[in-house]
Image (cartoon, rainbow, N blue to C red; front, top):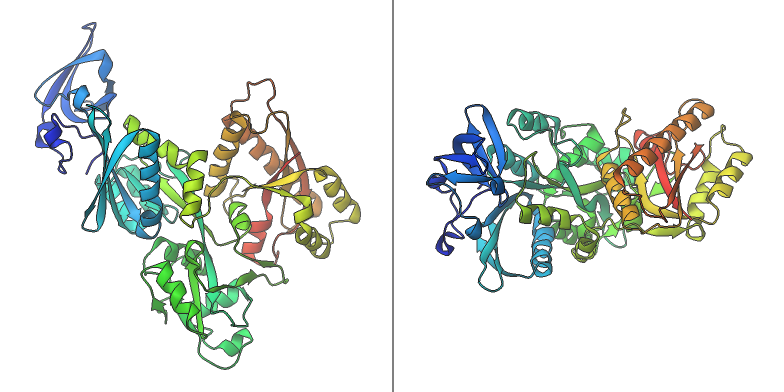
Length: 517
C-alpha cells in the first residue's frame, strides 16, 4: 500500500488497493495561469499533489493550482492512508496504544479490524466529516519492514535495530533518500538485551566474553561459569529478528556463528517463561519482556558490572541497549501521518510507552546522593592519570547539580553521535525550547576512556562536550528571556562507568553527561 491514496466517496474510504484511476495523467495550472505541469498523478497528501513528469517527480501545493483530469482528487473527501511495517515484537505492543491515544487526542472515532497477520485502524471525524485516515499495520520483522519500504509497500518501518549499510544503500538507489540521516528515523522507545536465568540460579554476573562463548558454543557447561557440572540450556528469541542481528553484532562483530545450539522462542514472554522454569537455562531476553526470570548483570574484566535498569537504558550506560526506531523515507507525509509521527516521539506519548513495558525517553533527574556507587567506582577505578585533585575538581563542578538520564555517545571510530544520542539532542533541545529548564544551567560534562595520555583524553572529552552543546543549542529555540545557560567541562578518565580493558567498556566510558543545577 502507498501513503498518498485518495477516494472520491465514503464507500471507497477503506478500499485497500491503490486505485487504477490514479495511474492517469492530469494537468495542473497555476491560478495566475503562468505555470502548467502535466504528468501522471502519483499521490495527494491533503496538501501537495505529487506528479511524475517528463522531467522527474515533482510536488505542487494543491491550493495554488487547478487540476484537470479524471484522477484529480476532491480535497473535501480526502482520506490519508498510512502503512506501517516492521518488527512484530515491538509493533504489537507499541503501535496500537499509540494509534488509539493519537485518535482520542484528535477527537477521532476509531475502529479496529484484524486482517490476517495485520491490523487496520480507521479514523472517523465526528459529525459529517466521515473517514479521515486509515492506518494499516503489517508486522513481522525489521528486515521485512525495510523490504516493504524499498518496494513502496510501506510508508514507515518500526524497527528494533538500526538500518544495515546494505539496506541504506538500497534505499538511496530506490530514491528514498539517506535513511541514516537525522530526521529519517525517530526513536519511539528503548529496550535492551538482557541475560537471564531462573530464580535461585547462583549466576549474578557474566562477562560479554563468556556470553559470547555460550552463544557461540565454546562454553557449554555451567561449571565454566562457576556452577555445578551440567549443560547450559541456551534460549534465544526468533531467528532473524532485529534483536538477533544486534546481539550478533555486539558479540561477534557481525553475522551469527555457523551453528547455534539453542531453543528459539517466538516471543520474549515465552522465552522468559521458559527460562524461569528451567534451573539450567540461560536466556537473552528483551528488557520489555523480563517476566519472572532473574536478571544477570554484565561484568567487565576489571570487575565493574552493569545491570539493565530503566536509568541505565535511558543513559545508555548499559551496553546492550536497543532503541526502537520508526523510519520514514525522504518524502512529504500527509498532515495526519506527520502529526502521528510527531506524537509518537512527543512528551505526551512517553506515558503510553511506559505502560507497554518499554522504556520511555522522558529525562529523569538523578541527585548526587543517589550516585554513591558511581563515585566509589570513580575512586577505585580511576587510572594513574587521574589525581585526587582531578576528582575534587569534578566533584566541585557538579556539586549541587543532578545528572539527567540523557547522555551522549559516539559511533565507534567516529565523531558522529550514535542513534540514541542523536535522538537525545532533539529531546533536550525540545525540552529547552518548551521552557523546562528556564532560568537554570546545564553542564555538558565530557568523559573519556583511559587509552592514551590523560591530558589528551581530557582535551578529547572537552571537544566532545562542546560538540554536543553546540548541537543542542543549534536545535533549540532559545529566544525566551529566561532561557537556560549551557556550560561545558572536561573530566577525561575521572569517572569510568565500565572496564577499559574491554571494547564495550571503552565505548561506555566515552560519553558526555548532562548535569542540571
